[in-house]
Length: 257
Image (cartoon, rainbow, N blue to C red):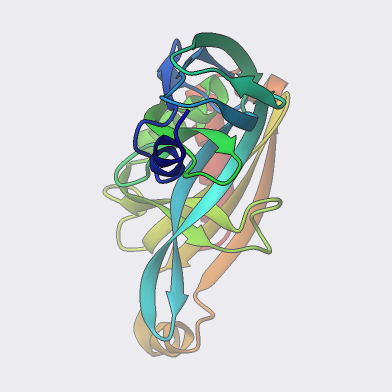
């Protein structure tokens, strides 16, 4: 093969191509992602160091009083070790992997995608990008339904920089609700973080009280009008349904008004 074709392949012209077909475009945190990766050789023989799948998302980080979008790797999976890809060769690689329990939900502006990449020495690495639709788990839906029963409306879902709360991730996904009935006039907002833990679910609630009177105004100005509450819901609690969970949440929130 000519030197010229090798040089072109090194910058992506006539090089290998990769494409991923997802069998599970809609997934849940802790669920399974599966599909097939199609690899097509280019005009020249190329050494592929490995094939990998990476799940990524964006999160917001404040920097110099500006909000900037950063990219985070949520999970990375190795499909194959190194091999030689012959010119024009067509290969297929099936995969099935367990997803992390802290995979962000794709509500509002939150986005999650899968990147498939070939690591090729001394060349531009070909890649493919596919969006994932991540829906809440059954347990998360029970809690979301309970919050809805209490008259809260989902206002925003954001991935925010918080390495101390994010565990192995540099961010947390925050669900922000506003009261429309029972707690209207008492709360400005309710923020909820979900921490799935196998057969249970931990919640971190940020209860933002509305300023009432002079004391409330001073409290708001000093940032003491917010309460943080951790709540652990076990399988037996969640199995009772949204109405039962709503009663428990109402008792907790009422204690912090």
